Amino acid sequence: MPRLWDISPPVHAASPVFPGDVAYRQGWSARIGPGCPVNVSTLTLSPHTGAHADAPLHYDDGGAAIGEVALEPYLGRCRVIHAIGRGPLIEWAHLEHALADLPPRVLVRSYARQPESWDPQLAAFAPQTVQRLADLGVLLIGIDTASIDPAESKDLPSHQVIRRRNLRVLENLCLDEVLAGDYELIALPLKLIGADASPVRAVLRELETR
Image (cartoon, rainbow, N blue to C red; front, side, top):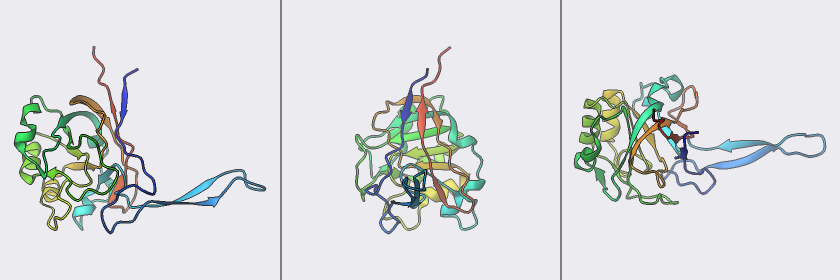
C-alpha cells in the first residue's frame, strides 16, 4: 500500500483563524439517550478554517463559487518544495532549485513546525513567483500558512495573479512531516454552492514506482 501523509491541521475551537473571521464552534442538536438513538452535531465555522481551497469568488466578486470549480487541479501529481524560514515573501530564488520537470501542482513548506496560534508574520508568495509558476504550467499552488498574501495586505497581489491566470490555491496545509519531493495530492473541496472557499481533507500519497 502506498504511504499516506495527512497534511490537514486539526480543526477545533482553538484553531487559528484570520483576525475577524468566525471561530470554529460545535454544538449538539441531538444526543443519544431515551428516545434518541444518535448523536447529531451542529457546526459553525469559516470555510477558511484549517486546510482549505479558496474559490475565485473569494478574491473576485464575479468569480465562481467553490462548488462550481473543476476538481482536476486538486487531484494529481504535485511537488513539495521547502522554503523554510524564507518569509516574508517566497521569492523565485527560494524555489528554483526544485523546478526541473515540474508537475502542475506546487506546495511550499515555509514552517519547520506549523504554529498552533495565529501568525501575523506568515510567509506568503511574492506575486512574481506565482506568475512564473503559472508560466511553467502550474495549475495549483499551496502553502502551509493562512494566506498566499501577507496578513496585512489589502490589495492581495498574489491572489490577483491567481485570478488572472485561473490558478487554484490551497492554504493552511500542514507540511511538518513532509520531505521535499513529488507526491500525489488529494485535496477535494466540498460542493458548497455559493461559498467563497471550502475546507479540504488534504492528503499526499506516495507515488507508485514501476
